[in-house]
Length: 594
Image: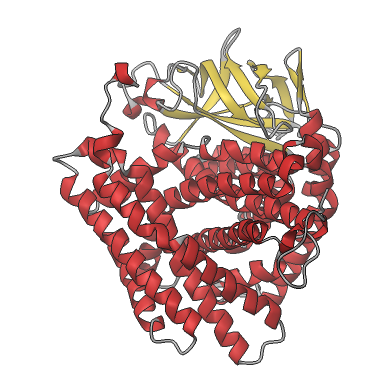
């Protein structure tokens, strides 16, 4: 088994050249955050990820979480790891200092979170959902709820969950039946929720459930949904824990992957009804929950990055030690010297680095959206984040499926054997395209809410930046940069053509547009990723020309960008054709012919 080592050089390079680390640190409120401090934080996080979390990943997968008589026991070592995680201040790192967090930029916390997800995806989910609950309560909760619940959540003494899905509704939130009856200053919640990540466990003193439910006078559909906070243990006025709430975990799922993360079925109100507190305004719960959902979607996209990095490291380590057959490439004695193995490793490396760039670019824009001195620039950044959220979630997680699968393939037959560890990354990655909204849901959001609703304004604004950079780089003295730029120019044109086709046919051919939604999302990720890859290659070439000491890394960075352009970005015209001409065959059969 390989040992996870955070790719600190690439993380820092990407934060600076794509995420805009220097500009983020220069924003008001970040005066004490220097690049030296960021480097120190990342170094400590890397040590914690490799020393504490990575060793628990494989045993946690084998043992899993266990349910018995309504209680869930975490895998061995997880409880101690969570205590250590919180004691070291990692639990609330990105949260506001007002509630005991460190208030670090999103770009910094994103880089750290990538390490947690690479080292131990199942463990990282507990913090991710807790921070999402913090975001929702901080944005929409009243002062009383904030004062009572935020500090222990940020500290990690309590953890948080998101309760949307119901057995009969699935992803159709409008069909939920969970009820909330007013009773004085609180409500009585009754109903069942499924697929609740870390819905019950023994790692924290309390679990705070955010639950979507309907009030008695609620209108039908999504406009009749409200959001409620239901703690596992009721909280007294002095902040101490009181009686157990009428909430029970009736089972946990037996899953393909992330075995150490309990996925719970939760019942609210077996007896008198679970006590809950309204978050936000009545009937506006879905909008409140979207604060948490968008937070989670971006972080799930980051899971695609993290699990891809770990699968790549595992495959690379195996390829560099496994001797089989005669190596073709000079200087190699292992299977890494076989061109097809090298092809897979290069594909894993290049795509992972581009996915990281997209996630970090979005994180930097999130910091810009809240901290830039200019209101106009803040708004531009907000619209970019809105546009890219479904792309980060959908594209990065879809890419992770192929990368983790290639990791198994590099191992050959040994990759299919659980003991080598490669299979776990493929199993763990599989859920990422499903939870927090499937790829199809993300794609429909992209073309419906983010493209068509605003007439393509934000995407076209972004494509102007991409086209300008591609045009400038096409005249670069470096021949590799110039070739990347020419490929990027062609690819950018295909994305623009596809967007215009969707805009022109949105009313006359809505089913055809929907049939092309996922290919359009893939095209968007491919092209915007290609742009960011070109920017990183340009920075690498400039640093080489300036005599940078880490020339091996920079030469490799230029090479992976060239690989991405030649092997991935060139697929853009095909994806355009699928978007604009593929619907007919997709929708050709009747139900009975499928």
